[in-house]
Length: 165
Image (cartoon, rainbow, N blue to C red; front, side, top):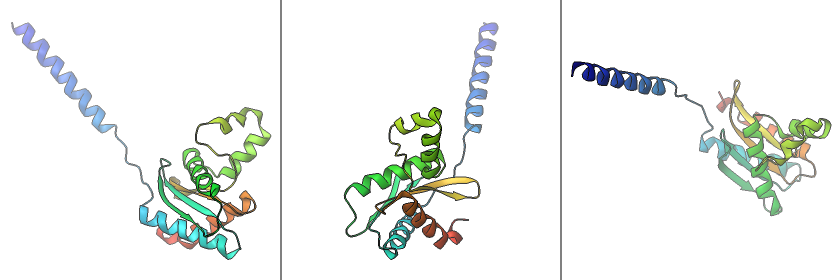
């Protein structure tokens, strides 16, 4: 009987130890606040509007989940989903989509990235970073070129850089 009791106690101790190890292995990740996401989307649309471009701007959290979307008056219907997909692609890859697009064009091994579900491999997606941490991303669609979409996102990031610390 004592052997059985010792075996049960040992098994319980091991199970408790594994549970404690599992708890100790959790992580904490910073992500973009929804209020900041709303400001970024507004700032991005305003930056493009100042240049005469009617765009949609989507802002996602670090996991690529939509936090904010602003569509300028007159922006094409397709720009809503295109901006969201660019933001998702940038957040997921932790890179600007312009760099991904160049890699896909110049490197046959990278061409498969365009086939990843939900990815839109066009310029206009920009990660939002605090230090080295990607906390979200902006996606912009509707300007007459992805490089112009990206420039609007960069202007918005510059406008609120003090909040991203």
